[in-house]
Length: 459
Ligand SMILES: Cc1ncc(COP(=O)(O)O)c(C=O)c1O
Image 1 (tube, helix red, strand yellow):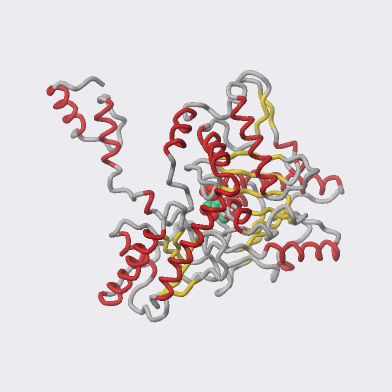
Image 2: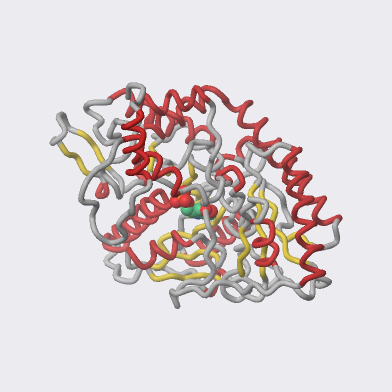
């Protein structure tokens, strides 16, 4: 827009200052500056994404990354015929992830870039459902009641999967003092209709990993005993981009033969801005061919597997940029710094005497705390509300079924936080506790509308 004439400026101000209709579609348009000013000013009171530590999702971008983003954000990713090189990047990256997650060398690597881990989990769940059903039918057995076994610590996506795709939920309840799925109660939940057991690497509530090896070994013994072989899916939404870099000797992935599929969020510790997930299969044949479609209406035959069709291409380009830019050594450095900073923050909060740590192991950079019993007149929700005055957004929540009595304060220490910021945050949290101890708090956990769901956390 050319430099505006004073009269234009005034009319722009009138447009900016106009009433915005609540429930009727706007009758007339306005100038681009006025429209942008209305949009941006209306969001001023929203949280600062950099201070939103209740979320695992990336908020930091390098300028070069923004440039890559801008060059690709008007492309519809599904249009592989138009953008074959973007599709080639996806294919290459799924092979890299298969390698990163120690997929067998003699297997045909196969994976799909999705909109997030939720879509990735659903595709993996569907593949296991279809494989189970085919095997049951081939054996002349009933295939009408598939079930899936998870821990009570699963993210809401798995509950959606059960309901949306008609799979019986077999959720092993948590216990107070143990927020992970272990092999302990599996015998009560697993049977011939179990399409897969889901174990988490980097769970939403406390950041811990389920006992993946123990579950795997239990399923081996179960197969020996019953002849029933049950695959595992690893929900590595967060751990998928931390474990391979920081704990290369830890077998959580395809090194365990029963692990047939793994998902991870490119937009969490994959470090891409929101809109990217990954699902990778141990071998091409695990992704049931019945779930693959071939279309030709965008020009040329094109395979498509996914719950969405059109989607933005920039996330694929940015993930490719980040894999090339950082490599294993770069991700290792950033993840190590994030974990070190999480430990630094955790240690300061524990030393304050106000908190007890919930995650017994510290793999992903998450600090999950519960208030010490000496905090008698305020709770975790009060602390979250109080630090919000300084701009920090921290998750306070009650744990899922069976452990609802436990309340938690969770802080995701993403790599954009440096030591200095962690120290400022620690001081702010301790100051909030001291204020609340003096003045008292009165926050109550929010009521959930859905009687089927337990706790909700942001992701
Ligand atoms: C363990 C786990 N699985 C799945 C999801 C869903 O991921 P997305 O937000 O990428 O769909 C989350 C989100 O936090 C998660 O923590």
